[in-house]
Length: 118
Image 1: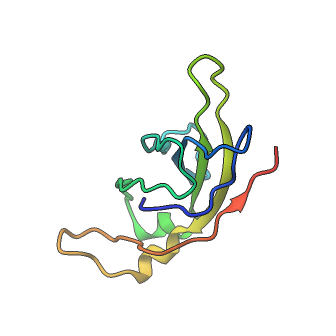
Image 2: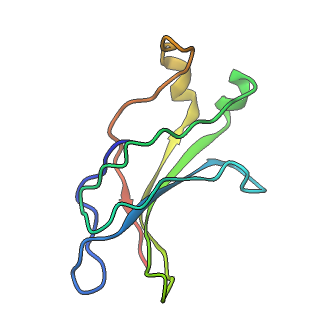
């Protein structure tokens, strides 16, 4: 995960304290859940974190999607985290990417995120 741009304001028109959450869908037991650290008070956060998944086969990737969502991290007192925006990425796109020097496939691109309605 690299960057996000133009995240919506929260509360009293304040920049969000955001983090990224990912899942491979479908995922019945949520074992594929990954989360980034929180970037505080920023509408254009930089996360610069790797999210790593290991797949047993290319066939597995043909039927799966990566769900990426950005969440606002509520205060420790109130604790009300809520989604800001999300997108889904078909994992078969990774099959079109060449392996890097370490043998990993890295999908580097900007993706449109769609705002959540609360």
